[in-house]
Image (cartoon, rainbow, N blue to C red; front, side, top):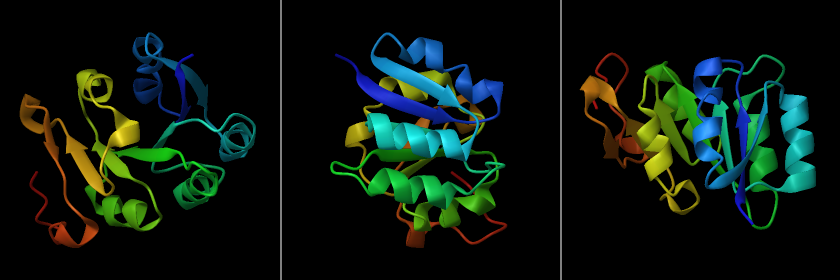
Length: 145
């Protein structure tokens, strides 16, 4: 049986990763917070991947819901807005994928075992993994990964 992954995203770019992940995981995709919360209650996926900007709720709602179960799901946020990273991590999300990122970054990581408060970036066509805590993030305006 494959581990479950839930994608919460309105962008087809991120959701397009789902087919590649289906060889190793059972993947569900939704674009609404309400459906995501219901799925979390029923299925309890190992990993939730969500866009930081959701239209019918907040990233924090999904993070709190995912973390309320035993065992808690790992929560990975995707965004192109670097300034939103500290808030996502403060909301309880375990890691951040900065857009654009190569699909291989998602495919090669075991996200359910990733250390907490991680930032992952594929900047400059060189996929790199930088493990930094919230307090180690550069100040706004000086974002270099």
